[in-house]
Length: 379
Image 1 (cartoon, rainbow, N blue to C red):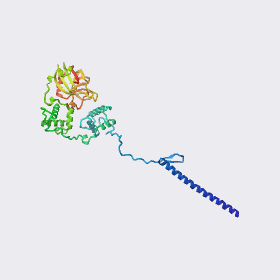
Image 2: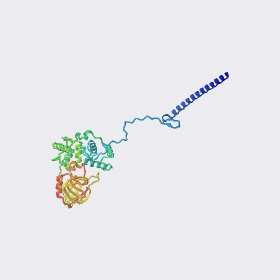
Image 3: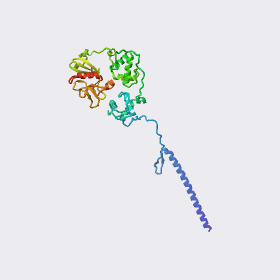
Image 4: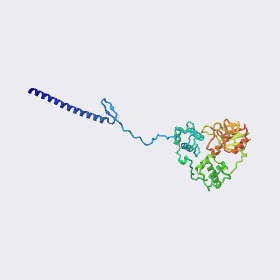
């Protein structure tokens, strides 16, 4: 019995010793595993922790806050996805004023994308190597914005304020003579060119400003000066000193030789004049303008004849009135232009010879016969 008790105690002791050893081994193994994991974390850092199969476990990266600063490469947004004929509103006004800055439209905005606006857009596009559609796409808008300044509220809505006076009442000298001669050329100033900014000059300037919807002051600011210069050519010395031309003294030497004989409309692109010449004698001189090279519609040079006449012609292509038309080369004709009368040399025709003196051209229309010569040249 005693021997059996000794055997049981011995077995129990062995079991307890084995359990203690196992627990110690597990503790050591767990400690080693913790050290290994810590080492792996220190080596991988933010790239990710090791998994049991040796791959990297993903680690959530903190998202970067979006920058509120605009990118330097951003392009300006157009006022609409596309601006096209028929559109209305402030967005169209902005387009029109930007085109005014590029000298493609008058200063006054209308807010209506009309034919005039379409033609200006098409002309501007062609000048810049863009497809001349007359419709404002993204590329057209971006380029226009880059080349112009944002219009102010007053500019958008035609609230015009006069600028500093360049010439005003009491001024004297050659600049005043130039002003008076230009006003006289478009029938706003009557009487002699005096070189003195008198009451007649003030009245003429006011009339010119009111007609063009410029602030009416009777003084010449930059806006008034620019508009007047756009509508007139530089006055000659004779025009500024009241030396009246004598149309009967012109000789064949002063004309293209082809104008020296017969009945001829002699049209000089250099002097911007049309002279009606019969047997070498100049009977009438009219100021003219020509086709636009920007739109690839120049007036042709050469020798032609009047093919047909139409006193009340209307353009089939553009729908514009062409009174006293005298056709000499296809669709190109000599005719009266209300736009030339209103805007002067600030515009151009689509190939025709525009005349702004309505009464003068009415007289010429009665003189010219079908078959008469037309000579267009540079002197």
